[in-house]
Length: 373
Image (cartoon, rainbow, N blue to C red; front, side, top):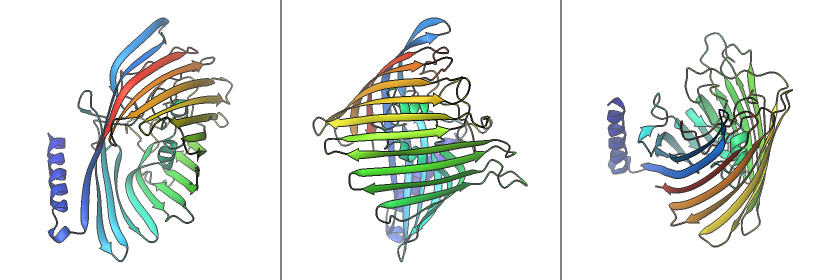
């Protein structure tokens, strides 16, 4: 009931701000995504050949609704905010029951100097990753998404986003850890750059996250490029991280600065135990409404475990309109030694995925629909 009351107040605010009068230079936009699919996965689980057919969500994009607003202050300055909630359209439940706006909740000041934001924000790696892969770093078919385990968003984040100079933009982030007497405890530092030079897009990002006592640090590096050849794009992407994910799955990074559940602490890591993900993909526009893509990804485990994996995938997208899209995906994932990587999507929904036994492979297919409003 508390969340329902909160939503009513937010919608009332949106209607009031958009109605004009004293707030004629302000606006609030309600937006969202609905993404559902029928999925099939096959793998050995618990020593048995197991198949899963499920109606799930968050295949190409995470289902969400949000409120995005801007107030014009004059002289080129404006105040901006974004509140975004993830949910499960197959059940109607919130994606994370312990927070209403689990995806974004920030307010900022923008001007000729760029923009400064304060609050829970997407990481540059999350944003860049979606444009460095023909699958948008989502669906069962994206090995880059299944292997490259970047931190998606951060609490208590202070960011600076520069204006574009020669079509190039930089970002700097600092997330306060809120640990008494320890400036670095639970803090997250980020630096990133993206540049569009004609048909060539380049991006790179670095993240460094400490645990509460600053005794362990998760370090992540992302770099990639895409080239628009007229009928589609070719994508190259690389990701390197030192979190210990070898013997589990590609989704082990739980909580530097509160990614999901605040009760889950940062993962441990051993110096030198890095994982490197390499991805190459491409798409082709068959007609204005129909496109197809394919990808190959490989993850190399530098530790003594040697838990490598590789994945190939194919995707077909068909646009029914500017807002509604159908998609179909087929994928094959191969684990080596004791690796247990699995196929996921834009985000995880418990009960809708299989985790293969150590060293076993997985097949997957999806047919889905995505609507944006």
